[in-house]
Figure 1 (tube, rainbow, N blue to C red):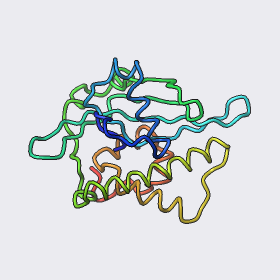
Figure 2: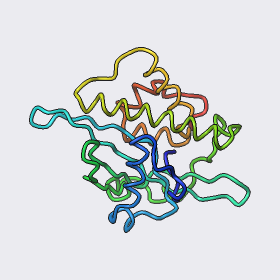
Figure 3: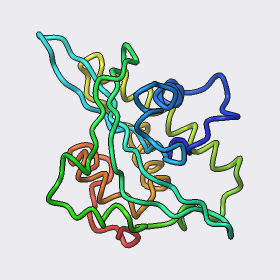
Figure 4: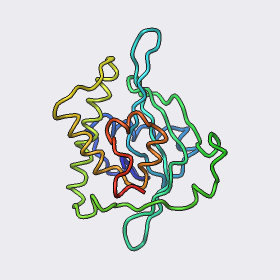
Length: 199
């Protein structure tokens, strides 16, 4: 995940996508509508062309994290998304998925679907996890900048590194929910919908 409910202690410098998440957390709309214990998930790019000009927006899944006294936290499905203009950093949309998708039982959001940390990162030290997280967010910055200039991210090592880090760091229990929110993006960087650890 990109951030927990508590932004305190976050470094003043770092990836712009990380700073964007902190700014979203502090926005009046989010502070009014989103519980402090909610987590902000990994960014989902939304590239568009408006009046012939490429733009990219960043959709951020919001989900509840319930700390476990024994360690770690229970994860719940995303209940909302916040969408931000990558170039202006302005919040352009807040969507409550419980309202937008009334066909889904409300009980779905009240049951945990997984745990943090998940097996792929459980053995890491806190610093090692933060280093991987920072590296992935730095690659997010590069990807979002490419999309903002109307360019599809090219081949080579960086897209492979991005996909590898996203595969490792994205909580497996949340992958199906990310696929629902951004099927094209997840289809490119997590192309196998039947990963053994995905449930």
